[in-house]
Image 1 (cartoon, helix red, strand yellow):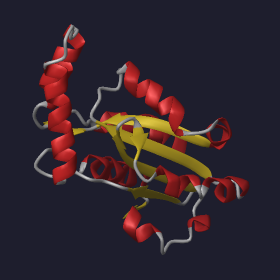
Image 2 (image 1 turned 45 degrees about the vertical axis):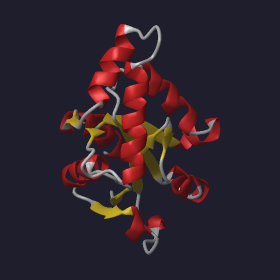
Image 3 (image 1 turned 30 degrees about the horizontal axis):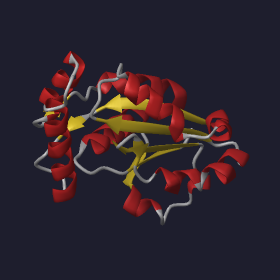
Image 4 (image 1 turned 120 degrees about the vertical axis):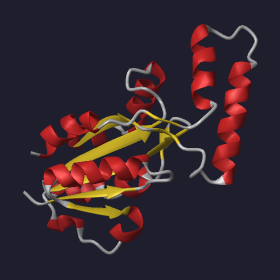
Length: 174
């Protein structure tokens, strides 16, 4: 089975997961910038991964445009989302539910892989927004313990990525 992993990464977490999947599956791995030149119909499985921002998956629209033709051709379609939230986060699960339409969910498997935050690699705007969000959470009136813990967690860079999170994706590829 011929597979390809296409990724969009801002700070490196999605790229790391894409490389882990590619290595384990023994398949090609390319950045989204290079994917435009590739004929995806040449592959049996197409895996797309990107990073989450404000409950959405960046560049998902690029992949969604390809879903109808690839699914008609019988391709296995997989999307993995990488975010700063732990995998058990209820907010993350709610966001995942909204990423694909009901029709897209019928032909595309969606997975979540926790990554982290890397302020040193973020662009200035993203860094500013995240710092403001952390401050707002920390100073929120009536903040819950969960709010306070989240504010403390996102106040600095951290890495909660783990290769084990690719196992359900690997099971789907094979």
